Amino acid sequence: MYIESISAEGFRNLYGIDLKLNKGINIFYGNNAQGKTNILETVYVCGTGRSHRTRIDSRLVNFNGSECHVRIFCVKGSRKDRIDLHIKKDERKGIAVNGIPIKKSSELFGTLLTVIFSPEDLGLVKDGPSERRRFMDMELCQMSNVYCYDLQQYYKVLKQRNSLLKNIQKNPSLKETIFVWDNQLEEYGKRLISARRNFISKLNDISAIKHKKITGEGEILKIEYKPDCKEDNFHSKLLSSIERDIMYGTTSQGPHKDDIIFTVNDCDVKLFGSQGQQRTVSLSTRLAEIDIIENETGEKPVVLLDDVFSELDESRQKFLLESIKDTQIILTCTGVEDVVKKYIKNASIFYVENGKVIKKTCV
Image 1: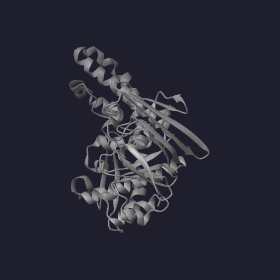
Image 2 (image 1 turned 180 degrees about the horizontal axis):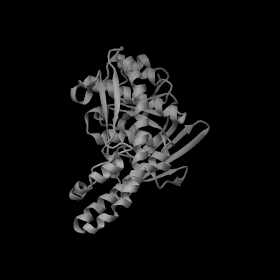
Image 3 (image 1 turned 135 degrees about the vertical axis):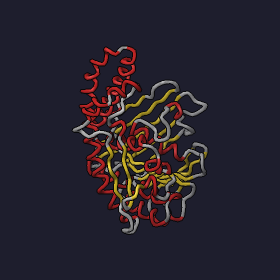
Image 4 (image 1 turned 30 degrees about the horizontal axis):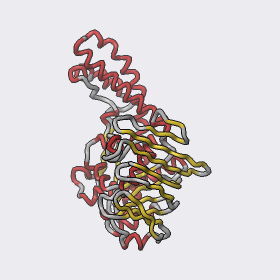
């Protein structure tokens, strides 16, 4: 899979962007705060329906504007798709695939497959469980419309159950109806747990191999899925926690409380790992994502590298580029560093300044 072209108008600081991309490597360079990351963000939003930097869509619109537009043409095998993104301030964003507006995220996922590497990847290891659940959900949704549907239904039922719990505080007789939501929550929850366990098992196997190579066989990485409930005890946990749930007006058990544990040589990386180890764990995990997506979909994702070279030493830079050499790469950097010139050939070079993009001579 690769992106053929990107056009953007009014997306953050991007104006008049109309780019033809290389099927291989595309380098966007320039000073900080000029719009390089915004270009990667257009791709990520068109692939997943949401930004990796903000949950508020209106922030994607230029401060001085009222709306923004993005259009991407991507090629998968013999098929070409057009993705259009339109956002107006204070309104829900609109996304269309081949001119047909989509109503649900499940209709978009899979059209444009992406994996992003960024300095914020440390959050996957260092931040709270919600970041790791989001990581699992985003990757699984890209690969499975069924998972995306189950996830949407789970959170819809969870919202209804939580609303009922608050109402039971005022009207205790409503407690007799909670089994309706419990049955549905259990149905969708079990599917999420099973899919996440399978995904993390594959991620663990592949990332361990990547990590050993990166660290010269010096470290053993393990990624373990920590479900809040298992398939066979979800029902009993819901029953046993009902009084507490009513007291607090929220559901305390379920896959919305899941987590992932990263260990290196049997030590929890979040608690005891150095920042360098945490960064390497994140790198190994992202590289494993690429392999899993290709194995599951038959397509290589577009790889987005947001200023990652400044965060990696030369050996890890070389390993990263070698690992993704057969994919389309869109990367940002403040300058066309020596390491890029050393390891990258036949790349398209773009200079970014004040939201404008100028194509330079290829290297």
